[in-house]
Image (cartoon, each protein chain N blue to C red):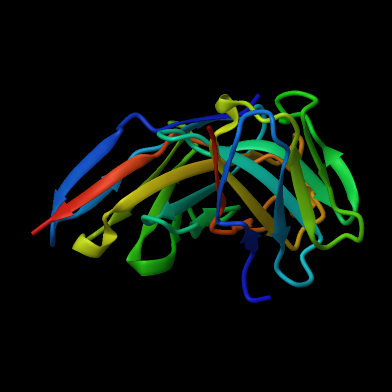
Length: 115
Length: 119
């Protein structure tokens, strides 16, 4: 079975400071990892994904994530947070060896960026 | 269309009524997914279609839930005899992959969802 853990319900950051939203995963084989963002009254928007290759993945809106196989982590980062980044962030995983259809999500982390 | 389109966006129904939620995937996407998201939770997988074939329905909670995609494009998720515990956001998504492991890296794109409230 595959699973994702987002240990923080909420992360608070001041605008201009770096931000990190944590994610750890568990799969039986090699993972494909994704980050999505949900703004109020909007759908889930794709941010970035790790498939293979460079462990540092760059995505939309200046976000990036680092894949760490030994720590089974895929933390989302941004060097300088904006108030407009405030939203709900979901990490998700797919086991490439398992049922290809299933994308398993974490419970989400609410990011609050303040002035 | 440009994105995944779902309707209705909001649905309030009385307990015991049947509801049908519609999804129009991104044009050309062969894979279609239904997820359910309760307040404070992440989306949970319900079912998956590859073209018109329902390849995986392991996430459907019980036999009151069913889904179809008869022509391999638009899909309908039907909930019969609704109960209050069915209240949630129902999200549809699509991707260009076939669901085969070789396509597991394909991005899944989500619609804005259908809010269902059962009273």
